[in-house]
Length: 322
Ligand code: UT7
Image (tube, rainbow, N blue to C red):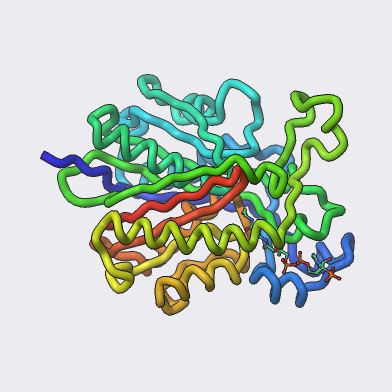
């Protein structure tokens, strides 16, 4: 019998503080109109000093558990995607496990930058299909605001904080149809954030902050996401018209529109949270998915394409029958 992993519940969390384009324009040479026209972003959420990747993950996770009417003790696998963990170790997944009072589960983090939640989803799907897990919690959680150089107008306009969650469970009914993950380590220099404590002496200068050659990243992202859409459709023997919703990584509205165009999808079928959240890295796809599930746009039985692209480079997709 084929076993699937199925989405049982979703959750999300956004910190209370909102930082507008106008506020950013007070500290770097930019403007609300430049940011909105070139990126589609107007606002982003900024975590409070007491918040952490784990605290935000907890709120998102509890929402997903509640939506699925699932007791934390039923969870046997926790995978957290984050590029902004509070600790080198223990993992954010273990911190979350403690916060949720879960005793018997495997918990670990994955690092795949903005594609992290797709990587986590893919790993959890393999575990469930092979019988290694029955209920898996997948989280993307990021405090990008703490690794952004707020004097760099090329990056500080883009990023925001938040956490998204999905609870997957074993099912005989179709759920996750396929996942596809890839990486190419050749592109280290186009997008990176060095760890200031562990990097070499020669590379201390820009350590601790996001460094990005935005325009070059942009071009690779558009081409790569076009290819992963083809790969996903082919693997499932599906046509573009079979997809009901596109839930893309929220990096730039122009990248999102290029992927929608490739799929011949109207923007009405694309979930966009970018305007008020910016790029929340590994949290963005799950936050967008959660939003569209909760507001009733994504309905049970519909086919949803999730995709992401990020540092590494890493990229991936998940095709889900919700
Ligand atoms: O999530 C991981 C993946 N990340 C991405 O996918 C991000 C991809 N990149 C982007 O979203 C875009 O490249 C940016 C939004 C970062 C930049 O937009 P762009 O259209 O690629 O601009 P650009 O870097 O080619 O710069 C064009 C001009 C430059 O001025 P000159 O040289 O033409 O005089 C920049 O200095 O815009 C200038 N510029 C700005 N001007 C006002 C760059 N940033 C800003 C700014 N405000 N914030």
